[in-house]
Image (cartoon, rainbow, N blue to C red; front, top):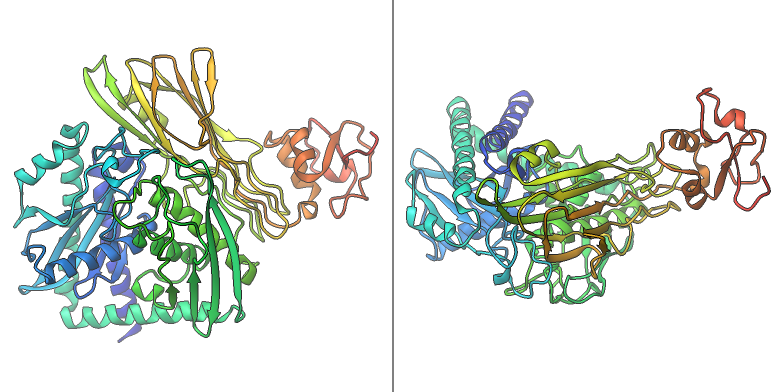
Length: 599
């Protein structure tokens, strides 16, 4: 095929998905979609559900999961368990064990027909603020079976030939909180797929079915070859790493992710043998999410490889049967997509930084900071479910310090503006700032997390959260220090408590004036801290990122006001006060010396 035509078709398919993403966010009711963009749209093959294209602004963790979801819908249709598709149909499904994530991630799938024949599937996922279950928001930290987490839907037709099935809708609304508000998200989700159908039809009209099929096959083939070329740059070897989940929310012990990555020829093999057994609480991961987490971890390392099913073809991801990374019914899974997937990606980073130290970062914050608050606002006379996600620090890398307040590893979702949250819900954010000092030390330090504090203004409410990295901070690499771990504090009256599981708890009763305080993790540091330029250490202190005590703890030096102390004995972190502050800016301290040395 003419290369220019191929490039235009490839970009056009991506643009269809981008426009679906925008239509979804702009018309959604819930702030988690409308403001935080916790959603994704894509195009999937009619034969097997393989990914053809996805929006550039969609959550990466949904890439592999929706590919699995489309495959299950196709399988169930072929087996006669689900009614076959007709033009205008939209299937709804959120079953984690049928290619999903957790129950709050609800997927819509619309068949796309050309001349009466099924050509592909248009599919999207949106995070609904609530799908029922034990606690508002669905993040039940203590659930021991999936039924406690909310309403589980197999693939059913919510729209039939363009008309919404009111009976299916009534079943959904009867099982979720603030049901009257969900209709706005449902119509937005369906409208996004309709936009995709119209735009894709224009491409078919312009190029014809045969040309489009040929282009899709070539795009997939070339993406696979691009990934194989990246794999060939690694030595043939096996790299091993571990990552840990704080606890499962029920048993207060860490869960171990043991990963071995092996390069053989053009293939990367991922083996999770030795990981912890299935757990009692909601930190189990379904296979689709585990698969997707590995794919997104690899894609982070090779961002220039196009994203479609061909990208994943050279990845041999061994299904980790018998571990908590391959959850089977009825294991609870609310923490799989938002938290466990990030520990999986972290393990991928820790393995491949050994193979490509110049290209892989230290560990990022690795938690979505899932915080849900549910209650009734007496001023409005209505119930609400508030769902909040937060960013954290990225890991440092060979060239630069980590990004501060970056979105989570698994997605592009961002924290909704606090002004919007205060308009929607009876809360006041007393603080929303960088978490200074949270980045791990290194030649290039980690980025900083977020420090926020939210107060309930009126009514009674229940708070729940499923977070992670509270027991262990994000690890540094190649000698770098770990980022600061996640911290949660509950302030009720004159009492401050820390949850037993540090980063997980549920149904915490709050009254007006009570506050929830959260400090998200900083990123891990990259490289020997003593290889850091003294001017950069002084700059960070000058900007208030670290105080002298933190510099002493992280870099092994202290700041003094004497202005004439040479620190030549402190590895490569050396220089005089003049060289440290060569830019002439004023500073709270003017020189560096080794810890323990006399002033």
